[in-house]
Image (cartoon, rainbow, N blue to C red; front, side):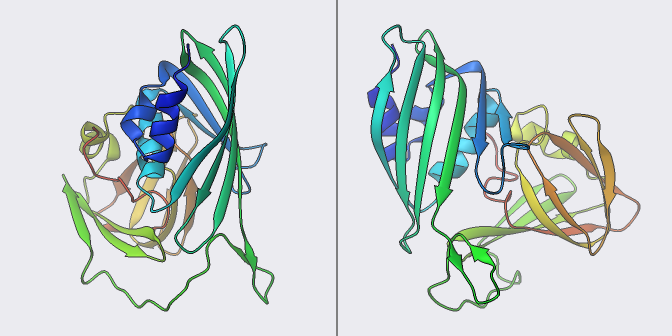
Length: 248
């Protein structure tokens, strides 16, 4: 049977290891929200990629509460409600539908929504700043190195911003894949490219180059490598939390 107490411990104690134990090896997780909408949801396949996603979620400074949990009489399906709260008061509500096999999750679809504030220009933001911050990468909180490159980490606005510095000869599948332990890079990215040229190949075969001044939004499942003799520098607002760390 599906282990509800392990689910509760994983969610409320932010215990990623407990949550990882609930998924079958071939599990698929689909997340739908206002960024990853129904026509192009965030899809994650396999325990390694799902584990990286769970590490990211559990690493955030926020409270989690497991609400109602329902399991079908035959143990083949389950559903639960999760309520979360950031330190600034922003609330997140998520509901998940699960398909189960031998008590483990094979497919999960999660729909989530969070508080938004509308500015005078009509823009929306998930979390509003409570105080001014002025930071730069001359004194990063952490620097992670790997062959032909590094990522510099700054903690800002309740989140993580990374600066990727990738030297000529760098390629994710050669230099970072051994750390990540996944076939493709499973970290989603939202990046501004400062310098250099990087070629990106998605798992579906789509391939393109990103140059200085470009913005790229990359879902999980891609490879990338430096083109030419100029180092690539990119600022990453989404995928830096565990980038360049050795998988647990």
